[in-house]
Length: 243
Image 1 (cartoon, rainbow, N blue to C red):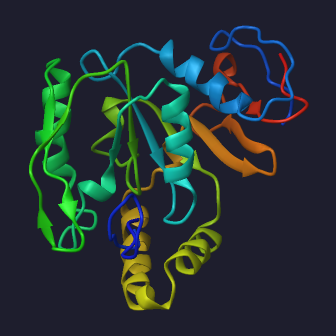
Image 2 (image 1 turned 30 degrees about the vertical axis):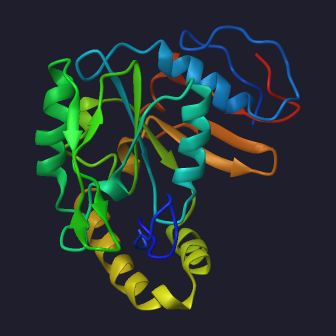
């Protein structure tokens, strides 16, 4: 969800266990350094086969206010500056969720051909789309925002991550972040998000669940892979992170 306030540099709309070894993760030494989970996840994502042309698209979905932007920024840094496509730039006042056709045409189709994508980021202040922005193919591209795991995009994703925070708690965080000025918009957004996930849920198809902890993040198997033992892997920041 986008915020009308000041998120992502613009005025926007409300928008564990020890590390277990598997074929997806090589052995790593025990560490107490925060960020272990994100670094381990980044290493795993790099080894995935491409999912859209030469790129590995990784969706980061979750309720508005669940911490997607912060987590994605840290994951992008662990991936040596992987590009991030923020769905706040694709959505608009008129199309809070009805943007999948434009995304497929402007971004997915060019990347699938190995070409650079070009999309026009939406300005939530002026209510207009801006100049086209290039998105060249990269080894890993992160797609972050509510609806990143929607039905139309899932076939093109190498992994789908879901921020595991209940919707009411997420929305409460978002409302507190944006303040009273955006109270009316949040009311409309919550209704729109409810409708979207009722018709096109993402969490049941998530490969991994991401939980924020006092030490950082915990990455757990998602509903889509709980029966696939070779992909059951848990990463957690903190003293017990080991393999």
